[in-house]
Length: 482
Ligand code: ARG
Image 1 (spheres, rainbow, N blue to C red):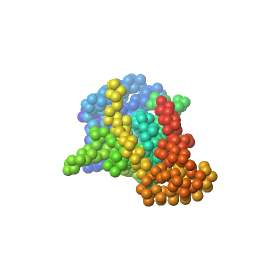
Image 2: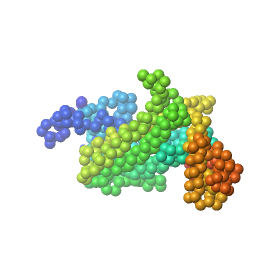
Image 3: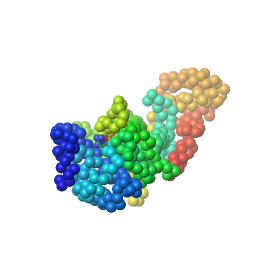
Image 4: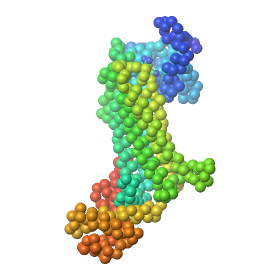
């Protein structure tokens, strides 16, 4: 290593230290193996800082040029895998800075003027996370679109709606899927809200107390796009807080946990629905696996893993929130532990959203032909809805409309269900004369409400499962997603 800094680092931190770090401690404290993925954010932040230093006359225009040249070279080298990451240089920041100095000399050593790794790393993580949130927003949209596509094709398909996993009332399959679209739309709102607080600038706080150089933090914020919807720079206002709190990462992981929880609920349903006992759906073979011993098996590994990975992401939330607890102001090395949970949360979420969009919506080929999406078995769903007296509430509502108080109607229908159960038939299969024994005003039109379709059509209030409502909901979601 030609650079003084590199030579020095492989010995001791500075002249103050009488011995170098032990190898064990080096490995324990080094983060470069995982934080190197922040390199683009690190370089972007350094370029913005250098540009401001030069504009403020703190470094010369020549220094700025040298820094830009060096950092561009480093970007290219990293992008093609030619950059040598050194454990000895601890983290992504020191690796890039040391290489810069090696490439451009003193200008590289001036880059760190008015800056500390504490405000540098906080800025890097925020920049990186902002970019990932934008990617995640696109993936959340794709999954919502995939669910809407399937919903649109199944507005009139009926399945039993459950409470307590007992057949409750018939619902449209599209309506059921739209419940997940609603959840994901709130997830997207939450992510957008988190993004506002992620997108604030710590740089300029230096180690903890601010700096003696006349920095222009607003300029750096603008360069880095850390501005609100009116273009106003968003700057962390307290240097101690700026370098030390990771609440933005915690918030993000909480929002990510909710996305995973929603996907986990959907997973659980897909798993149930494709079991032989339900037989409601099939997912394409490429999302399932076989068994090494039972040749007949097709297992829903993807939804099962998503359900399992939800625990992993919720675990990361616990890790981050516990990491923060008990840290005195300001920066502490504990914070280096924020990265792996955060990175893994992002990776897990991206993979899960991608795979679900494809598993639900399938792939469209160049001819617009869809392949491999969720396939639905409407007959089985409908048969299942007919099993559990799912239209009992409709019969009660019918009696109420004939003048019976609801509680009495509820009781009368309980008797009707008991009778039907004893005969092994559905309510709609009881003869009119039998039904009339439960309430004399029951007429032949009762069979309209006892049918699954009649029950569905009757729930025509906002948010209800009637096909007209469901179609309107789909249109609204499409409109929202643009
Ligand atoms: N690698 C460190 C981290 O991730 C960078 C900041 C180090 N600052 C320090 N004062 N040791 O947090």
